[in-house]
Image (cartoon, rainbow, N blue to C red; front, side, top):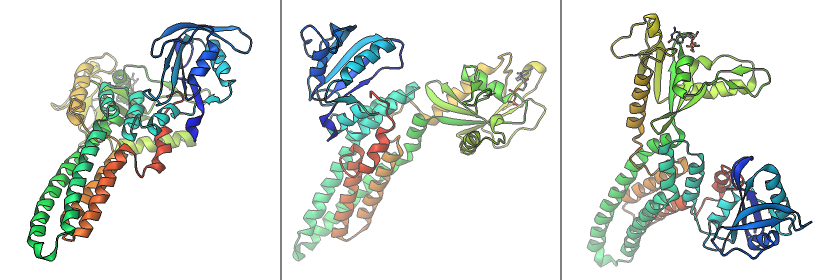
Length: 432
Ligand code: GDP
């Protein structure tokens, strides 16, 4: 079993940095720290200054803050240690090298610390997904949603639904035991059970209907920027993105405008897809990127049509922007008039987009389902509950209720999730 090895990794970002944190988890975590420090072991859970010495030759590796945590009440459920080093490459490689030369210690795989937390019941699967979201969160709405998931909000809700299913199941099974002459009692129980089940189905339907809002907070809204050439689409995208966006492509000697530009709309993540960048190309990699951007643009949450006042507007557009006001462009009443180069009207445009983003995803209101996996489990549970409500057959009802309970159980990941584990943990970086 993997848990037997002691694992080590750099948990902080790319050096050089002020501080680098090396994590060690497993049965040898404390022994490993002990063999690097010349003084006594620090008290558990107390950050203590220690000299770290290479056991191979006695040379000084760093003066560092060291902390050890006794398992199982730790992030991984195992003995754990952290070394807060000076964040230089040579310090980090010296310390990692010394640790990895010890028997029974190896470099951690991506996500392995979190995987151990899952295996040791410190986190359930929905919480693990929340941790991955939290590390990836770029906006305040994403952070809030990820924190709720990590904190177990969805797991608790799924558990509550699961036990409600099991309550109805217990009654359904009791009804199976009624003798023939008690048929009227069984009938009355049927009616009650059916009403309870319909109530559950309605609640789940409402949650599933709200799931796209959660997915949009997590993945970001998409805004397709359309319009004829040269009206200033790229200039507007650049101005909104708050960074001058010409990115260097991975291919030597070329610079191209980005097609998808991330923006933060008042705490809501969004991506502007600049359709000016969607051109024909011979390059296979770029062509694939363009194919995806085109697909995303056609499914965009908002079409922002840009003109310079000389051309017609687009009837499909959710927002019409007329650019080049400095050249005397005039806008119809519903349009926003801007000058991308001078900045006139750009604040009005930004505020319009922020209001639109907020009203679309309502970031302050919590949403339970943000992952496709969670949505699928709730859809399956809802379908099973609807079956249970519709049938008159007590045996079939019990069977459907068991299906529903097991679908809710998949949220926490204790049953039937072996095939998704690798996919979920592959989202993590090494050291997490
Ligand atoms: P796109 O083809 O729609 O993406 O247009 P670009 O953003 O590449 O802009 C086309 C040209 O219009 C460039 O030369 C820009 O400098 C210019 N341009 C963009 N916005 C404005 C503006 O507000 N006023 C003026 N005068 N020129 C602009």
